[in-house]
Image 1 (cartoon, rainbow, N blue to C red):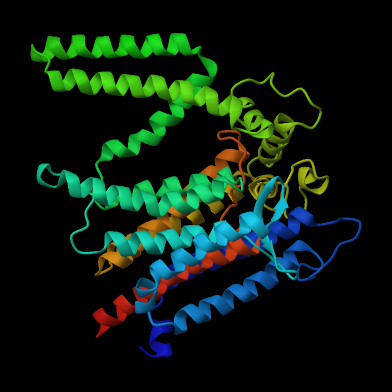
Image 2 (image 1 turned 30 degrees about the horizontal axis):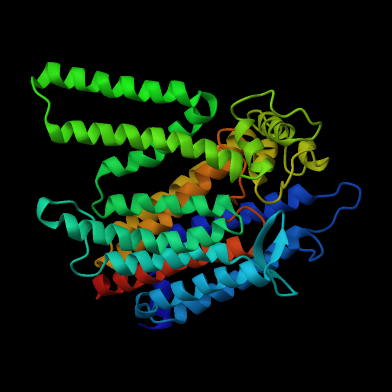
Length: 436
């Protein structure tokens, strides 16, 4: 395929949405760090917006490189890239720099590199390569139960290795994103019941923190007994297999409740406990500038924007540094305050448009690798977008999850850029085939 043919077959809608989000991100970063007393141009390399523009220039170089690479190499070297990222995740635990309590970055002098951001890309390629192989399936059938468990175990291992290494940094936010691959598995045939497992685990996690274990265990046993009673009333009999299954489910939930308390008390760090508890109890945080204070300032910034916002560079919460990490994890506060409901809605629509377009591109791919990879991209974008905005509005504990293309940071921008443009390169090849 010629270079001109590659450019002609790239999906223009996706590129437009990408550029719109990146531009909005640079403007938001500039507004977040704008100093009224000593204003600087947006392209000044001494401020964060200028540095982000420089990072965008390097992202363009990465895009050019992706366009020049043979599309077959992304699948051929998927496992090699995965192994390289796993190696980097091990090395960062040994020689990485510690920032904000997490040893997650390599300090290269002229920049910092966070391998956890590229682990999502590596897993997307590796999972796509594995699940697209002949004979590999996540569909459960009576004749292939053993094959299903083998496939599921290998797929989960591909995700678990980098996820556990990231958790050791510790970076719980980046680790959570690997849950997004459940959506990929569902598209590839995984039974829908498995999608409810994270939700069930999340609900029971909260219940285990606010309800005494004895009461919670009793409630689980009562629900199991009620289920048996209702089932017997409707069916007239109860099989031994059903009894064993329900008892096993009940015992797993009770054991999980005990493990939640143990993990909460003995594994989580004080600030992690605090971030969870402030969502459950308003009286937890009594310090003048504690976690609840930060969350309250985030809500104030978003709510103060009203319908139309205060205007570009006019955000008072932004200017006086009331909201922490406003150029990175809490960048949505700047958009909410200065753009108001209309600006926030526009941002959300851009994300919905991008994710929808990625799914459309994934569904029209002629081969399994490109389709599965496309769903990996869409799922990662969805989780990042949902968790970040939920975090800033107090609907989810505060964790280090950047807003794709908007938050300041080179590793995040580059990893998401590569994610998108590898998919566009694969799609460009598909377009050329159909055009021919």
